[in-house]
Image 1 (cartoon, rainbow, N blue to C red):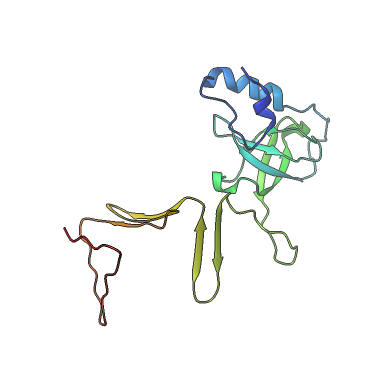
Image 2 (tube, rainbow, N blue to C red):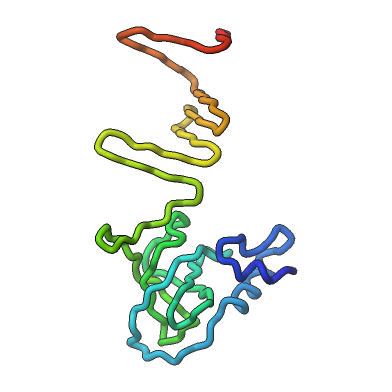
Length: 181
C-alpha cells in the first residue's frame, strides 16, 4: 500500500484497493503527533479543518503544537465537509496533543482581510441586485422531479413532469434548429 498519499491532506486518504480496517490504523499511526504534556486547563489554539477520516471524525492540521502533523479529533460542534479549509478553535483532552477537541469555528472578518476559501472551482458573487454562481463543469438546480442543468458546453437542460413557459410580452424560441416533439 502507498503510504505517501496520507501526507497530502487534500488527496483521498485511501485508495480503492484499501479497506477501512486496513486504512484507519495506518492513518492514525501516520498523523499522530507526540504529546507535549500540556496542562489539563490548556490554552485554545487555532488549527485548520482538513477533512474527515473514515469514521467521520475531524482531521485537524496547522496546529502550532504539532507543526506539519494531521490530528484526528473530536468536536463539540457540528462540522460539515463544506467547512474544509476553515480555521477551527482546538483544545486538547487532558493536555494531550494527540487528542484534540474542536470547540468552535472561526468566522472570517472583513476587517481581518481574511476570506473563506471557496470550494475548488466554485465562485459566488453577490450584490444588491443579483447572484452569480460559477462552476467549472456544471450547475444543477433540483427540486423533486424537476431540474435545471447548465453545462460547460453551453447546454441548458430543463426537465420536469410539467413545464410551462408564460409571458405577458413576446415569447420567442430561437435557434439554429428548433425541434418540437
